[in-house]
Amino acid sequence: MNLDRYLKRIGLDHRPPATLEGLRMVHRAHLLAIPYENIDVQLGRPVTTAIAPIYDKIIERGRGGWCYEMNGSLGWALKELGFDVIRATGAVVRALKGEAAVGNHLVLRVELPEGLYLADVGFGDGPRDPIPLKVGAFVSEGFHFGLSRVDDAWWRFANDPRGSAPSFDFNLAPADEAVLAAKCEFLQTSPMSPFVQNLVVQRHMSNGLAILRGRTLRELTPTETRERVFEDVTDLMTTLTTVFGLDVPEVAGLWSKIVTRHDEVMAQKKAAAPA
Image (tube, rainbow, N blue to C red; front, side, top):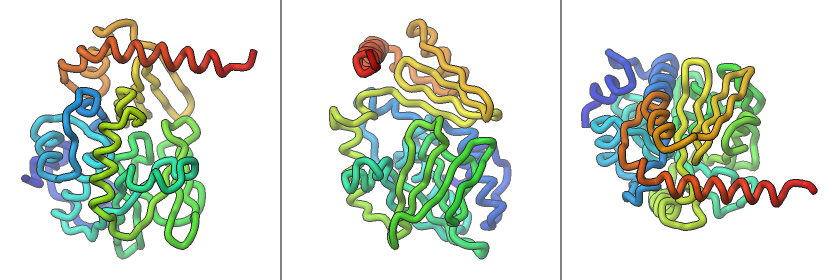
């Protein structure tokens, strides 16, 4: 694994210092260059929490990844740059699912002279910059977020109201890697997993966010939300290439599954709507 190749992948031509400004530089560059995506899960290809295969996928093969891969590669790079980094446990929608959610997200704790920061490029549509560990609401690039304390061990991150998931909890103690690995396996194999059910691709753009879920594409700016449904498989594949920078021809074979899932979700929403 080569740090300079990672930096080139995210568009940096030098090694940033292990400072707050350096952390912001790498964090932002990673999000703008590498998309969040679960294509391998959809294709039935094994996904791991191990760093070497993650490096090969994202840096050498130009792909994206989900939280274990995105934050895994960032955490490795930050350590190589000299940052004090700890892999910590996240739990998306723990507010709703309770302890069953623990380990379904990987986050990074970074300690700097200025204090503790949460580095997270693996949530998909979270803040573009690392987050100082301070209770309160904050705005990043025009999107609204917040941090609160749940108890002595857990914090809660509140997403922008237009985001994909409303919140995740995180514990700053070193993660139990066995728990992360087990949850990674569950999320890519269980029929109940949203990552098994749906194609998900997200990317930070210069003016906002692009969020693909199944047959639907949402484009968000601080003041506008645009949404459309893909017309056909050609429309989907063109969008993956032009918007998300992903060239994975095998995704075309998922089109029938994507359409079926879209129709199911639309039917559920119609049935749940008030008469």
